[in-house]
View 1 (cartoon, one colour):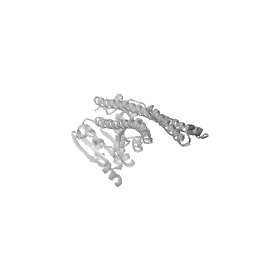
View 2 (cartoon, rainbow, N blue to C red; view 1 turned 90 degrees about the horizontal axis):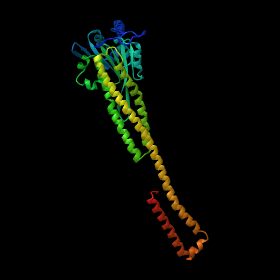
View 3 (tube, rainbow, N blue to C red; view 1 turned 120 degrees about the vertical axis):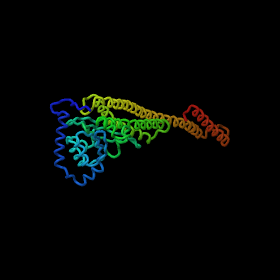
View 4 (cartoon, one colour; view 1 turned 90 degrees about the vertical axis):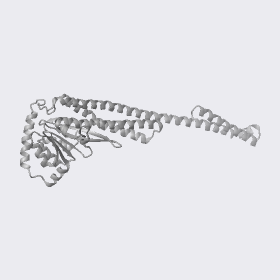
Amino acid sequence: MATEPGPAGPSRPSPSEGAAAGGADAAAARASTAGTVPPELAREAEASLRIEHWRDGEHRTMAGLDALRHAVGESTARHWVDLVDPSPDLVAAVATELGLHPLIAEDIVERNQRPKLELTDGFAHLVVFAVAWERELLVEEIDIVLGSRFLLTVHTRYWDPRRAEHLRDGVAAVLGRGTDYLLWAILDHVVDAYYPVFDRIEDVIDDLEDRIVSRPGRDTLDQLFSLKRQLVDLRHVSSPQREVFNQLTNRALPFVAPEHVVYFRDVYDHAVHLSDEYDSFRELVTAALDVYLSTVNNNLSLIMKRLTGITVILAGIGAFAGIFGMSEAGAAFALGEAPGFWIVTIGIVALAVLIAVVLRRSEWI
């Protein structure tokens, strides 16, 4: 595995120096805190801290802070440290054992970061976001720290990295190829999980388009605006995350073997493809909103046409009735009161029916 240093800078230590300093600090901290772990923290660590330990082809699964302390002490071992819903105290304890900078631990505890990749004390700290769809978009923050001999992942219990396709046959084969290869396996799983969500969003857009044409209403409009908000949330994580994957392929990162860069390039290609699909979804939703507004306007115009047709019919009847009521219209056109009244009334009704038929054929009513 490559261990060449990252970009030099006047205020940034090299990876080897950072790792050495971090290791010295961690050793001192372990020496001073050994045997002083509070019982509550020890119980939490047993439940939330899982360690996949690999050394010379042998793999073991361990849990707890004591197991982590022994694992870190083996110089030739590689290990994956997985934290699930940890408390700030547990994050601080794990960061001390691994020799991480306090700023990394602080970012992990806050859990309100944006996708990013930072080098601190020779360690690569990544923040990425997994997504899922359960009636609406769900976004899950994942903190990852890459070192030369370990990979730290911190997440909630709603996301399980062990479901990754490359880990279904066990962690040993992946971890044996290096912690950077394990990082790729997890990132590939994160990106692949976007595709089912995008398929679901596409189905929702298709359903909305059908409803807009057939029965536009308030519920359809509410769902349309809800989808637009969720697409905005998706853009907030997917766009900067794509740049994070791009940095993994272009920067001389510590602890990433040159022969493994091609794997991260594949993840970046998938992220670019997802970005293109997102742009298509945004255009479709915008077009659907325009169609909704056009449909509502068309329906309003149709209602106005129907009201106009009804007005024509009623206005004609009213006009005849008004004339007929003036001096009894010449004794009902000189045919006497009763016969003339009924002849004029039937004529008015027949004329109204004729007008209604004409307007109906003209699609006005």
